[in-house]
Length: 165
Image (cartoon, rainbow, N blue to C red; front, side):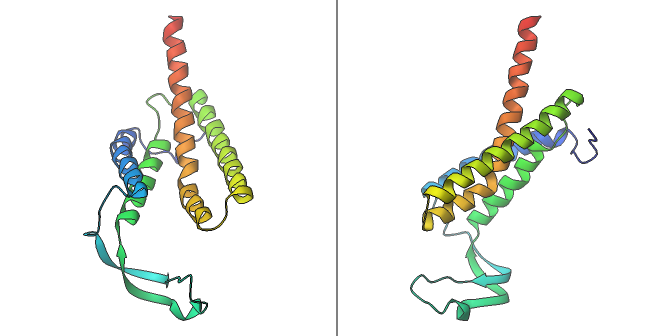
């Protein structure tokens, strides 16, 4: 496998260092365990659509290329999570060989299959605003499943190799 698209191995440690706190912060944000009212910023928005469930004239609230005041906590945690998960997932291993490349490819394929099976389940059985939450979480599931499977198989195989010695 051509590894020129993979990051150097040192990025994996940095990625884990950022991913763990980002995951914990994300869980606290989802559960409402944080009060981050102090993290409101004015940010530039290419498209801003203030959706009101009780107003049928949604088009009148759509704005383009404007500065808008937002709660930046979700955005910040999402950015840190995505960047750190990409660093963990796509950094070279210390010993990057053909087996690791094959494992990386099969884990990526496996994570895409599982992700879309979960999404199909959501399309069939989850409706309303709960479905919007599922779609938000779905942005992260491919990376989470890939990292979990890839590292689990690496760990399992390293344990088998040490047991054989």
